Image 1 (cartoon, one colour):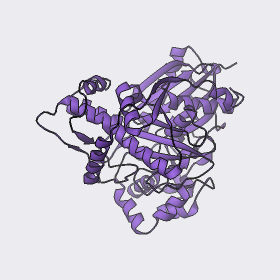
Image 2 (tube, rainbow, N blue to C red; image 1 turned 45 degrees about the vertical axis):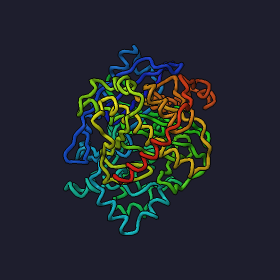
Image 3 (cartoon, rainbow, N blue to C red; image 1 turned 90 degrees about the vertical axis):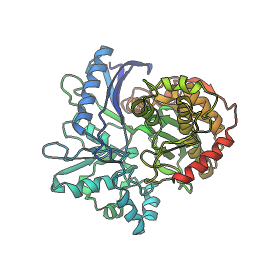
Image 4 (cartoon, helix red, strand yellow; image 1 turned 120 degrees about the vertical axis):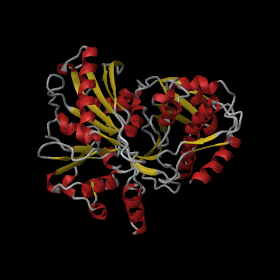
Length: 480
């Protein structure tokens, strides 16, 4: 009798495989960093073959650590960096170009041209999204325009699709509704690829994967020596997986994931909320809908302090450095390295640091970096409240930076909301495991899962940051 589930969490900066036991405790974790490729300013790519090899390596390592073989795995859940675009040759299975990552801005002009042609209203009405380089469609078009390959030979997929193709040795070309809803090609109300959108983007229907439920059997793995015969049963884009893992399955519940970017998602139940404040309507993994605000640079700003400025040696050091000063000393840092996401949506904005004086220290810049993460989130939360009308009292949090207690307290103070950190930090992978487990009968229903969620720590608002928020809005206006 299989007693474990395995979640593949393929993210922007690393790949992780986590084996969960029957109590949903992580039995083993394996992680491998992913090389970032920057061919030009504002361009970001990954090597799809490296993505796949990192999955194979981490899956095998995690299973070895957990001392479990394929017979002990009930199902595989996959969660992935969304919007990242891969096009490959169906015949030989080889990518025809590097993966174009969600952060990539090379199609900003193409999006502007589509807006100029009057297409945005139709696109937004059907997809819940805006015309921005963030999403997959213009990335697909760019690859097709720059590679001389017969489209009839090609297959497109976001990372989940690419991994399932590899896991099943080309037998399954599928994606789930959450990933499909991030392509600019999917009508979220009807749940289908939309012919009008395909025409606007000039993308052939035959390269697209079949769309399945986030919790459903969609193929069996055929990975020699590790996962042969194990059902692939859960698929969700990373933010929707985290929403499900945080058990935000009622309208008005919300979570924020602090990773490379920051992603605030609120469940809107069976209602598609068409945002008037720069947010996105999207599909949730639980046959519901959600409203999302995406901040492009969050944890990546801390990485920048480490890798480019050298003021910290490891990312966790930022907490102690920032805590060594009472405030940021008037420094405002806007980390718009790849433009501004929600609610501003300006792909051409670039970062700035203002308010520097002779007395500014590395600690002030570190503090301003944590404040920038919280301020961007608060902007999104304000827009979400205005769109939905929900008086959100609690924000559930996860992701690497959520372990930073100072950041979480700053977040509670700036947003004026109770911040609740999950006892299991791996809620993205946990959501994928939940989805897979439901599909294979690991649990009878979601009520069994709800009983397992526990809080690790609660951060209550203690201080007002209204003066800082005013200065932040002024600084945003200058770069936007």
